[in-house]
Image (cartoon, helix red, strand yellow):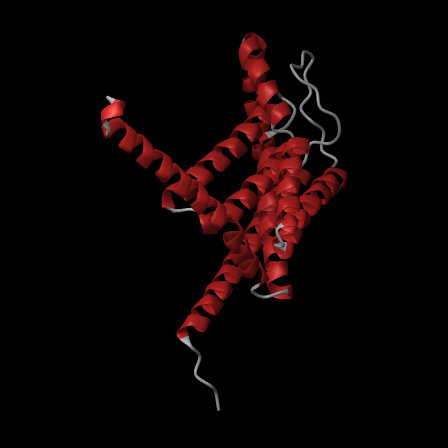
Length: 267
């Protein structure tokens, strides 16, 4: 005999299963595409090699003739480097741990660590040479595949959007997604524009980031079902009183200004 399930309990369970399936599908999709791309790169597939070469050559020629453009690309690349994006995600993980959202903190820290390991392992495994020019506009050491800048920025951007998503309205979510997507795209673009990565390196970094974020989410949900949701509610309980106090103080200040403006002394 099966006991009836209350709707209030069943709905969160169905949502968790849906998120688990979505994350698993994303992880498998990114893994499959990354595997195909890796095979094409390793086999030196002609069409991909020619596409990579044409993009890099064209952008290198443009960079040589436009020093201001090149300097701006280098500045953005330096600011949005792996060290910066990993520090941002690390700070978020520390804050989550301090407010008691330990599972979300571990989720963020695992992405940071696995992202670094995946990038390091991929470079050793593929050992792909970077673009080479007689007159380079920028320098980078190590192997090319995948792009560490692209992977680190995508992991951090996706993680921050996921953390913000339950606490934002529709407009806030749209802004967060737009800002994160633009930042990831621009950082990836700078690596190609500076001639230190092939376009397929950047694409590999994005696919690897999707695999890391989705894979860690699946692992945590299977290990501790519902733990991430409980930590989301803990964040809400921690931040809502502060937001309400800020809003209340703003309304009080506006009301006092209105009263002052309408009083005889305020003429």
